[in-house]
Image 1 (cartoon, helix red, strand yellow):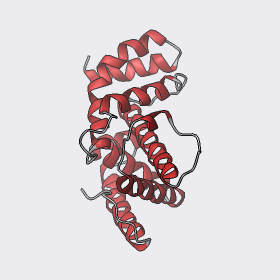
Image 2 (cartoon, rainbow, N blue to C red; image 1 turned 180 degrees about the horizontal axis):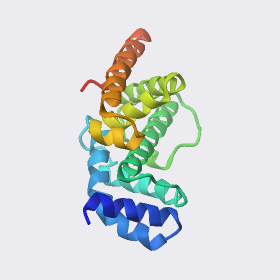
Image 3 (tube, rainbow, N blue to C red; image 1 turned 45 degrees about the horizontal axis):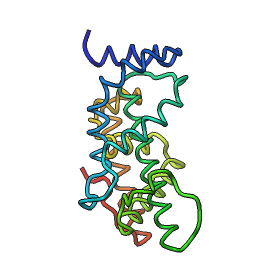
Length: 196
């Protein structure tokens, strides 16, 4: 049995309530989750307290709460994991921006670590806001961006996760990048958003 099939079977068992399946799943997916976390953290300043391991563990805690989720396959699991990591970083960025403005608003658990420079935080929030707007216009294209840019998934993996053709993903990726570029530049915000 290949690794992808094994992961898919363990995900199905976990979704059916088998906690032991989740325990066997973690070692099989941990390296990929760390790679995804490194991609999310790319460009952060040297020496910040939050490391990729902390991001993986925070996402892990969120994933454990989704035990009853019906995972389609390995690609679906990694897509949701990537989305969780993005949300953690966006929540952290928003909290840091609130603190800069002097707000006493409650912060997410990762805010104890200076995860993002304030400039990078505002760029990350701007990209997240644009992705939220894109999701309202075209949910599939926003998922393509999440999977390709944040998750580092290939066109083929993204197509499998979304159950669409490779050509559809390629078209959606191209259109979404153009839309995001226009949106982010139109609002006067620049970001290190999707380019590749």
